[in-house]
Image (tube, rainbow, N blue to C red; front, side):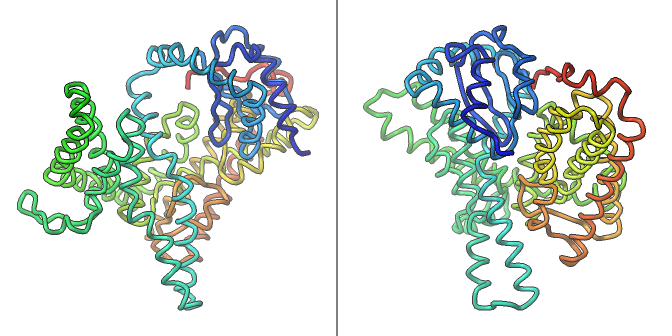
Length: 470
């Protein structure tokens, strides 16, 4: 049954204290994110009971209502329409200072840093996905020797973004950390400019792209610091001319004669570590990574992996970590199916599973986490067991030489198939990944069916939706 976005938005708004209580509205892939002036006015049980609401995450004065992919964007638009444009701006302005103050007070330095770094890379994900799919299609065409007149053009379209990704990282870094975005992009462009091959640092000629996204991130951070330093000390008459010049000069030279070299060494170390991790300890690494990824998602710490994935893709063309981590979603799906089979009389929970399962199969696990497994308790642990088994399966083949990677970050589950790349052929790579998913499904299902539920689980699920600090 198709969700009514307007009705769902109105139901949520009435249960979070009305328009006067909303200070900010935003959304991500699955959640409606609300800043609230007075969280005590939220009717939590009534909000969880709204049809279409799959879960609730509380973070201080911010409420994240889990709605699922696709639905959340339409509901957010209706929610903002209910607030009204002027009302939304007024409440946002009124609550911004309070929201920032509470966020600084509640967030640890590590969490805040991870969120800000993630904010740099998250806007790049759609382009990574699109270019990654095209690169995979082009690879199949080249291997099959089909359409030889088209594949060079397709390769160009797929590779162009990755060739200039440093510029986009620099732009968003400056934007996130309070600098001028275009200056961040200008400084980061030094990393990929072909002319750097004529520059020698530490006695070694530089190469275009050396340092990759980490070098671009560091360059733009330095540029933002230099820009702020200049603007705080120069009169307005000189600021417009001197500040951009000094920012580009200082940060650009520092990038050439230090940051590119250091970031290149760090990027190489990350690549080497990732390769050795899977090829020498694949089973153990897969077991740990696949088993712990759901808790990382729940705590928001998975954001720390985004720059690592981006570095591996920029350096090697794919990230071997993502397919292993994707096994956590498979365990989650298996656990949800077991809950669906066991709790035959809990129609509300089964309806939640039916609506969230398609997203789970495509790798978006939050609706199942917050709507099903985490409220019930044990299924969350058995889902982790399924993820660990799937990760170990992929790790076994990595130790045998058949490493599976992904050419883009973002999708997982079935949606990752078009993005797969590996040391074996396309068929072997897809088969290993499919075997890992199947292992995760089966182990997650069997573990949940056997020990993941208590006799009273169906009666208490609705009252046990967790509240946690994101």
